[in-house]
Image 1 (cartoon, rainbow, N blue to C red):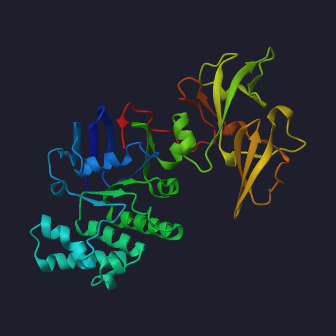
Image 2: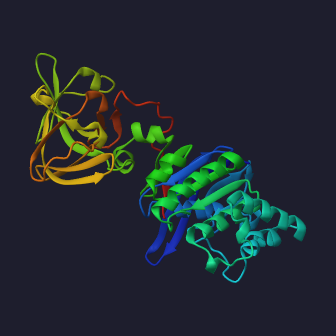
Image 3: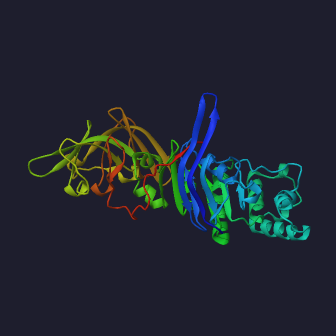
Length: 390
């Protein structure tokens, strides 16, 4: 176990049209034994960061440290890391046992007996002890993934690196393997950096989630922090499925001390507590965010200035929930509700939401100004000036 530190990590590639800054002054600390999941859209820099830590790419500037020791100039085999690739990268002509023990033969002076013992222990841990004499071509995708993970385990590294290891599996097997990897981390407690496109993987597995976009670190925090207290509009929109509903609004105050958020399609009355933590004058423009699960049908008791009307465009039935897609004057709005609520297509649908579910963002900077009072934890890290390229 060891702490992984990225201090001002910078990576520049030389392109045909000139230098391409892939990673720029990325600062990130992963604590000893912590499981950190890195997420973001394609091209955000997840894989480049992982490959640079692994030594498959060289850092242009900055430091990488494992257990306080700088690893920038160390060969990959000497960094005390083990990496599981998306493609598994198994040797097709070698048996499972040979695949799992190959790295130990190359990088250690262990005897054949010691390596065989480690391989058998790791295979038992992964539930593949009866496959040791088989070759990868005869294995299923899930079995190959277990072999690749077992190969990393036998190294007994200080740091695990996972590059979308479950993306080639079907949905049911992905969920099962998530549970297996979480169990392994609990058992081994090895510092882990895990890259994925799958938000569900990130939310269910991570001690902490790191969100990247456009080469920049947007937010690092627990799954609840990045979901309930996104530091900016990108994180709010990216984290969550279906994604957060976004509306442009203008603050309007009246002489009686009341306030409203005015959109071209609706007006929503608010109390002073929504804006009491930042300066908000009459006429100021904001971005209003509301999670789909925070929307619910309005009824005759709902005030007019708490009601939003849309036209039902699509209804997706997903078991215990329904996803209702509304058209509000040409803008899509997503509602996540219980399965009993299933309106007809092309009918009107009135909904409302509670004031404590409101998120407000600055219209110019898109930084968060206010979060709903239902937020369970205070955020511990906000936007950082770090850039990463994929």
